[in-house]
Amino acid sequence: MTLDTHSFDLHRSLPLPPKRLWEVLTDPKHREAWGAPDDKTVLVMDKADVRVGGQDMHRCGPKDAPDFEIATRWYDLTAPERAVFTETLLVGGDSIFTSLITYGLVAEAEGTALSITVAVSSFAGPEALEEVATGWDGGLANLVRHCAKLSADA
Image (spheres, rainbow, N blue to C red):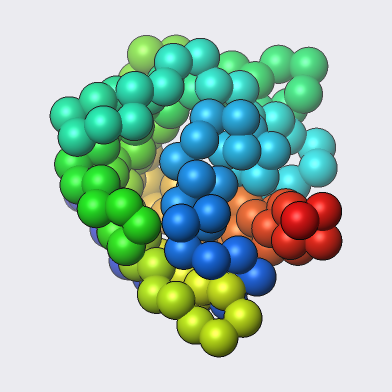
């Protein structure tokens, strides 16, 4: 079987200053609030160790059965400018894909310009590559809504 790879960039302007957005991107409770790809799924943080070399474990999936395990390993945390980490999706103990993700945060007049680069290696075929991109699009739509609510509440 061949290794399937893909990379893509995402950009969003968010209404929070970089320091506040950093918290939203790295704090486990905030990640649970925006990290699922749609309203039919949930993200549950089981372990959070947000430090260089730290590993998080969370589950994602339907609200009644979030059975997909994701291991996150943090490599760079230059707050509030940059974060670099990997995510590996495990299903039944098998690795489905691993992604290298880079967040870049730059202050702009009304908040923060967020750039995300995702490089994916799929071990389960090319279908997983599209699912990763779709998941990130959905998660970022949730992030935009979550940040708008936080901004309005401030």
